[in-house]
Image 1 (cartoon, rainbow, N blue to C red):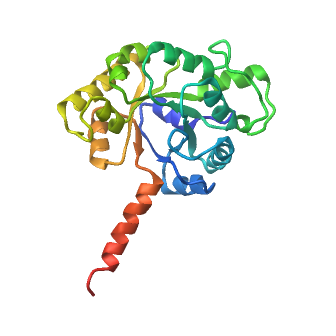
Image 2 (image 1 turned 60 degrees about the horizontal axis):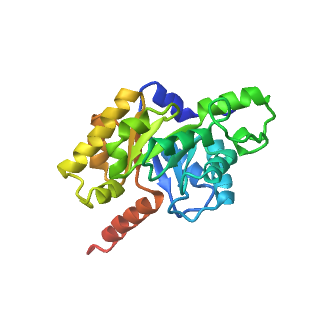
Image 3 (image 1 turned 30 degrees about the horizontal axis):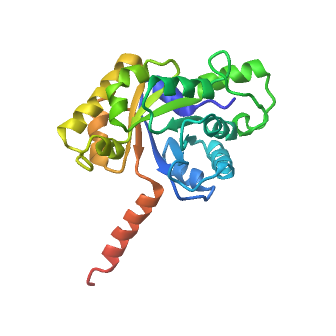
Length: 257
């Protein structure tokens, strides 16, 4: 089975950098992001327009390009978790996690026996269509695939130790936009309540051997939390990057000569 490059880097205590695609179906986006130097890309099935065929194609190209494909699923349902993994995603991010019971279900659904209950079908994108002994494949898949909990609710922060103590969780990735909404302080990214909530998650990650991460477009905020120990850094989206570059270029062109 293809090794998960970013999981290896994180296990060494290093930092990985990625972005989230939400509206781009072009398969070459994996090549482009890899060429730009990104380590991973999230394919956003929660807010994006992607179906499982899109995910299959995007994952396949990303794997060949050397960038780790991850999927943000719409919800914690078995078929929404298992199918992207079969298609070749090397990890999943699950939004709106609240309870330990949810996390235990996520682990059961994404891990093969004896760790979980995921059904096994070998000749898929996740095996690059290579024939492997089942015993070896399921062991490797359980080791390589990542489970990333998106921490974006007040309730999740309140019960963070319960969530992160479940065996099999690799990353707690904070969505500060939704977390600020849940806390009743939308867009107040320097609010002490939000700062304390994020710090609580980072501290819990350290206690439980889980990687802390964040997704936001603000570079200063990302660098601030990198200094505090975050190592899965998800910056912006290609759509926002394109809009920002377009605005900057046009502003320059429209200046008086």
